[in-house]
Length: 297
Image (cartoon, rainbow, N blue to C red; front, top):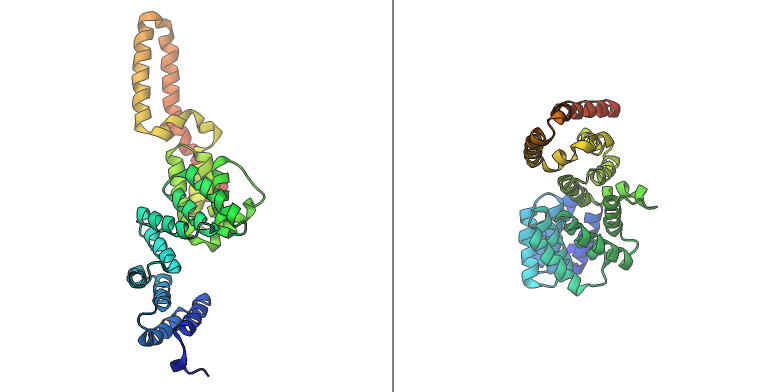
């Protein structure tokens, strides 16, 4: 049995890293308590404590430990990387971007860092920039899983399907943060009226979580919005009340003009307007009900 009293700070760090890799977080915390009692200012041990806090759902404690690390060693790469993650998860996206850009200046050949920056740009809805960063990430490191995810998300948005497409759900399962980005992307794409692209991403989320009725319901909603029969209602789905106001103003102008120039078309126009209103009120719920029944919801 090894005598802990003769272990160096590096030895402790290696032991802690091994425990973390095996998800033995409680043991890692005990090991860190003993190690930090002997080496309270060691940056790698403080980083290990921050990582354990992060992995066990204590982001505030993790941030405090990271700030101690970076106050002693500002260039600590792993500490800066974890701090960027904490910023992202707390919604401090500009701060996360600043940290990632600084890391890329120091490690310009890191495909994984480019991939992380790409995922952040997807989250902030800078989609063109995200796709460019994703392709650079994959060029630098063709085997990086996050780079593959970032590239495939861009392909889904553009409607392309590559040979790697079937791997996307599995890859996302190994990178949980990508699922949160995917949800935000779906919201953004729906706001822009890109329902088919949003549905393609939602389907990949469903493959990752096949038992989720919430995601299945999301897929059905997007299936309805992207259905060919909903095309006449696209302006209302895209712009909501603003489209209704524009239509109302346009119809008043048309009826006023037709009444003066061609009063004989007022009857057909009335029929068309009433039919369109009935269609917009009745058809969407019926379509969603049919799609839900087909999906078994």
